[in-house]
Amino acid sequence: MTQDAARITLVLGGARSGKSRYAEGLCRAHGGERVYVATAEARDEEMRVRVRQHKADRAGDGWRTIEETLDLAGLLEREAAPGRVLLVDCLTLWLTNHLLGGSDIVGETDALTDAVSVFPGRLVLVANEVGFGIVPENRLAREFRDHAGRLNQRIAAAADEVTLVVAGLPVVVKGK
Image 1 (cartoon, rainbow, N blue to C red):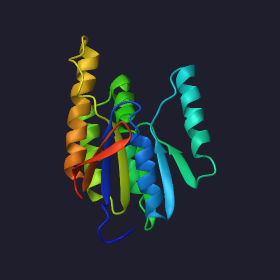
Image 2: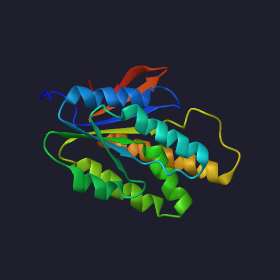
Image 3: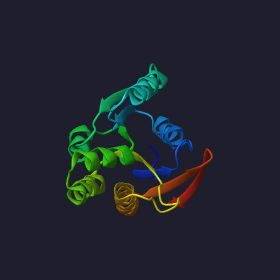
């Protein structure tokens, strides 16, 4: 990693915007060991198929994959190492896991933000930008949207660089 490269990067975008592909490219450019932190919980067959496809897409590409659906703060503490880059994909699914599990979202967000702020290595985090749409019609969806917006704001404030990916094109929001 060059001296001027960002230490913490948040990559935002809508569904199928190309944000994960962009984030993976950032990690490849870093060199060294790459760890893919997958946060999805396969709650149904369609999601199980998606998870298998994501694993197959990365197979043979030099990634070590860790599945962590809840304890991202703890994982960041455990996996920090010189020369290693961590890609967390994605914060939105992590938030969903906590919301559906009845967790203390504010406490979990605090713990994750603290862990990101002191992470000593290279970290790339992916999240969906869900604030561009209409106001959802039900309480759970509105609660999710609100928590996701606050989480993204907190992580963006802690990040050195924030990039919004639109139709596969990166737009730098913060940083270089």
